[in-house]
Length: 149
Image (cartoon, rainbow, N blue to C red; front, side, top):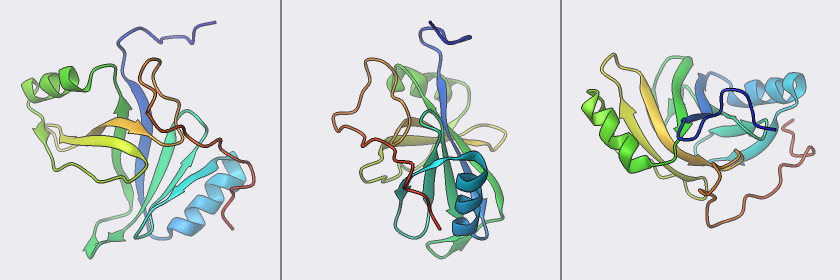
């Protein structure tokens, strides 16, 4: 049975990034309250949690010597055609930002929209890939015992 509102070519929300003063405590709360699974601990403190479809990326307020306020950081999408999406974003007035090295978390390209909102386009470890766009490296199964704290 198809999911409601899922149409061919429609972008899928795949992660939401949030800046936190205490990444560990926030991750533990999300795991305890919402039963999210630990997907990845990155260098410098970010933690990725997932329900298996959408990730929440928790970023420290101070990362690599740069401090930003706690709160919403950006939203990430998976798309059928990253090149076409890039072109449409640029035509809509978005600015392409520097690429982000994610290691084994697949890939992402960042853009800033005209009103300042940052989005990224890519595939992320721990989320379900779009059919036909599975990464070359298999994602390990999310385990319930991968809980922080």
